[in-house]
Image (cartoon, rainbow, N blue to C red):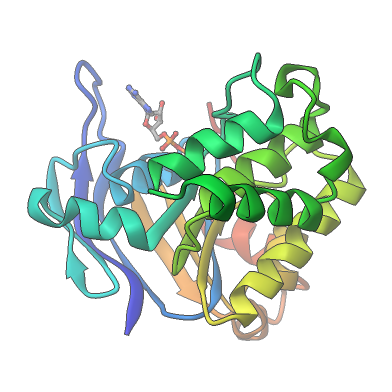
Length: 248
Ligand SMILES: Nc1ncnc2c1ncn2[C@@H]1O[C@H](COP(=O)(O)OP(=O)(O)OP(=O)(O)O)[C@@H](O)[C@H]1O
């Protein structure tokens, strides 16, 4: 089974002169950590926004665990996926615990069960001492870790993260990557975007490189490197397929 299958996705934002997605198709196998990679403006965030139902595609289809995404299946799909957006989506004036109780509540958790779940996750992410501090006063890494907890309280089978390790220190990054590996070892699927290709090479079993709204190449990072004798690593493969021109 696939965790995600997108077919011939097209998207042009209202007022835009050029399309953001132009016939994008790819699928990821279930139960793996996979990377959706591409230069700035390639269409990664647009794709993720369509996957989670925040943005409507112009045409094309999306399946999550073989369930076709349409209005009638939105609730069922919502339970299966957790989304960690690029921008921190927390209330800065509320404490970490208050924020997480709010998000847990949206998924139907209440009372003691909710409190236990929140405490357990704050501990996993090294935030137990900061539980009653306002999130607005957190460091970037602390905000990002809290943002991840908000997306996983309902234990989604598919976790989608948009640049979860961008702009965080080495310690937070290491904790986030370790968490992703452990979450995957429990049988869950993880899809993430990153510009850090050494990191993607290290943790992804499969990567899809997209550019200008289309799939450029997909495969296991080591297989892709082996296919190109001149490429030493995933970054070389990425440059081989997407070129050296700087993107706006
Ligand atoms: N709300 C919007 N309205 C108009 N154009 C948009 C909007 N969001 C994104 N775009 C455009 O769509 C294209 C794809 O953007 P998108 O954010 O999906 O790329 P990305 O691969 O996530 O880039 P990055 O690595 O910079 O985050 C870009 O040309 C961008 O300017």
